Image 1 (cartoon, rainbow, N blue to C red):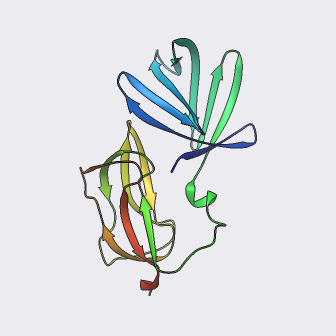
Image 2: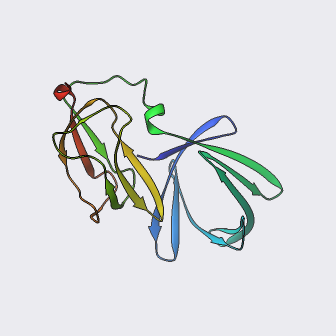
Length: 167
């Protein structure tokens, strides 16, 4: 699952993968080698392919403000629960999958525990960024497929919920 951001009123899906000496930015079918190097305070050097740009970045909550090449762009992170809230729901199991490769740094639930939609299940880390994996529906934790310190690949099953097990 890619992360979604609103930029200039349009939603864009993207994700980062680690590669030797930096990262690869995946946007739709486009893949770009990128590096973001801190240069003090909010100043960074953004390298895309071999092109270097001075960029100022400020983050406030789910909003990221980027000043690049004389223009300011505001991006807003769109939480997956908000994005997929209108989708049809099926009965039975609900599976939380890894949006990117990473490692588990905290687990907030245990097998057999009742959970509510939006409740944090675990925190993962990928490329020094922490992401909370939350319950997509009410249910009972059927299985935890990973534990603290364990690494996983993108799209790995992390937690399985039983929707029918809701009290």
